[in-house]
Image 1: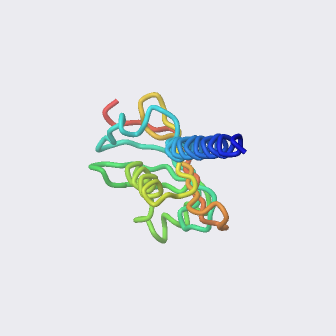
Image 2: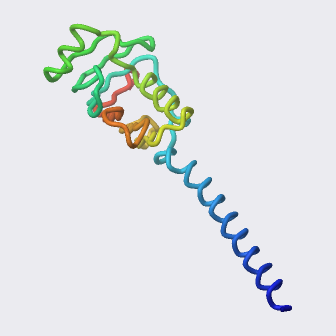
Image 3: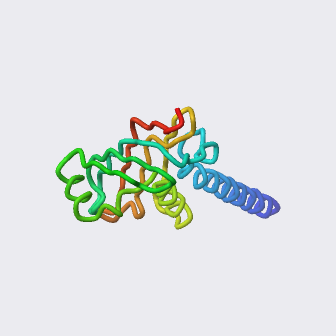
Length: 156
């Protein structure tokens, strides 16, 4: 009978240790799951003027297609649709074509609202090259994938 309390305490300690370890691991994964790769966007400051190509896919959204975008004074001044979907959007709702800053704001919002996936891959200079969002993993058509290429600051 003297062994039962010792076993019970050992079992309780093991369960407590496993619970603490699980909590620590879960917290570590939560931060890392939405962190993306380094360097972070914090290292990059959006210039006032630049051009880039945006390919926006996935989900049921109006911002679908491939665009060549020119930004001046922090605002989109020219957007060229490079496929039918993009041309239609530029013609009907040109104000929906985003700056890189607007895409990063969407990423930040997804992270703040604990989206199931909010990740970004960054170029060596810190600008985003790929942003992947999925607000609810089990929901259909709430995803967004942004691939940014041919980024060129105007001051280069």
